[in-house]
Image (cartoon, rainbow, N blue to C red):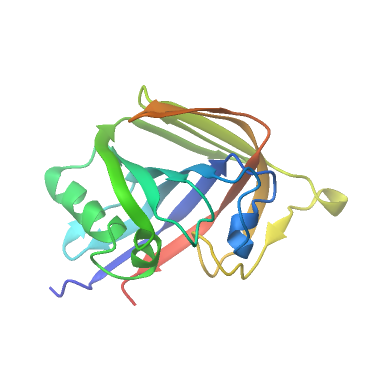
Length: 202
């Protein structure tokens, strides 16, 4: 099959050290001058060529030492330990940007890969809360901000985003902790976003 025959659908969420709502999605500078973010994806349905990716997870920790659109990022990559070798290869092909699509746009900002690890994922989406335990290296939990009449607060058509085509629900972090590859984060009451995502080569 062609290398561009792939598709992923699922949910994603992130937490970072910016105040809510994180200004980076509006192409503004991060509120603390740098952005430290953990972004995680859960694949409900997915394939890469003939490799099934249903139910797998992947996450990246990002340290952007300045404006996210003006500097290269340092990143650490975490892959679901349940993935077989062919599934890991497929996930790397997609999220490295090699296979095209929106992940290629995200990957274009990466300068240094600090490390790649296979870890246990405990990814949960419950009501207005999203949480993740990432092996023994980190965890995060966010909860949606309550808007007018109890509705979600959303950002739509943001110019710089993880999941184009979907409104991002604005949240605040209960916690974001990561200790790995020289990154040491302990963050609370800062920004979070979550939404569905859909990626493909075209």
